[in-house]
Length: 166
Image (cartoon, rainbow, N blue to C red; front, side, top):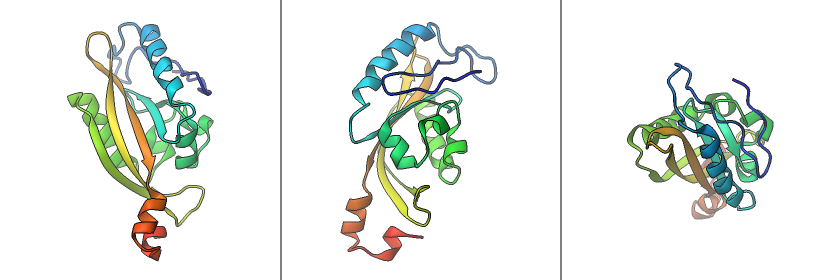
């Protein structure tokens, strides 16, 4: 499956089948256009927003996710969460699968992981995960919206070293 790098205001192609060959999108172009409209809202906001497909491959990331994860847009699009964030993928993937299975959002999930651009520095965030449904109500992917809480966590800890580094 070929993925194009999504630039601001664009979303890479959505697969019409998952890795097992099961059809996941009735009208992928229609869904892609709707997701593009939503993604445009998040191009300039200071919260991280990403879209993954049913196989947990990034389809869209905004600039805040790029900064938060410390990986370029090219390093995200078409790659799995595990490929981009190997040390924290298990928890994120669990939440993404949960919302795709239940279609119920997970709101306010606190996350922490080591910063890629600053090894040894812990990054804190609060994440909301939501399923993306096609016209038939089937989950075809998921979104994550993350607010960076790192400065707040450090301030609340009084700047303790254990809040800043491992």
